[in-house]
Length: 193
Image (cartoon, rainbow, N blue to C red; front, side, top):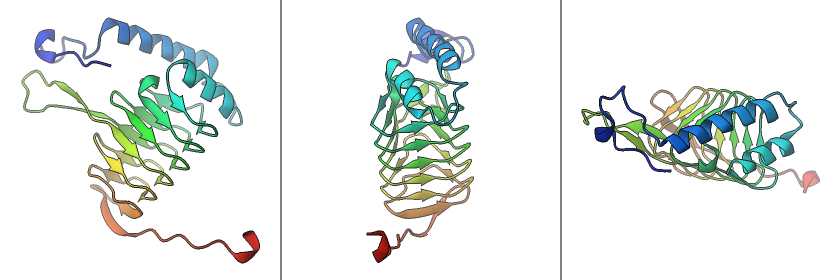
């Protein structure tokens, strides 16, 4: 997906950042999601996976996306095996968003994979992909900003705003999010093995 040059589009508010074809695809996608998936009950994850795949998303087996999730551009979405995207999550994926296996993005979280060049008089759109590693948790109403990489096993606490990379197994909270400790998983009890 190519971002249009803002200088060729006129004033910042006058021109589109994406081609007509891209905009028409997104209209079709929005109508498709509304008609085929937005109304579906929670257990129909398989059906919603199919709808997302029909529009170009890459979803591994077991990936689950709730009906109230908003995906801006499905071809820029990759979900690993058993990843979960919870109710009301917004994936503003003008740039690519990849969420690793067994990661959870909780209700109301917002992942934004684009920004603007604030030094450019035309306010050029800049896409910056987001990568969430395996076994991560992006908690309720957290924000993950453009170009951020979240290391395997990291946690972004509820309502945190993460603007820089999160190291593997780090726990982050606050605005802006700061590292507070290392995540340590308990071993499974002997009876569960």
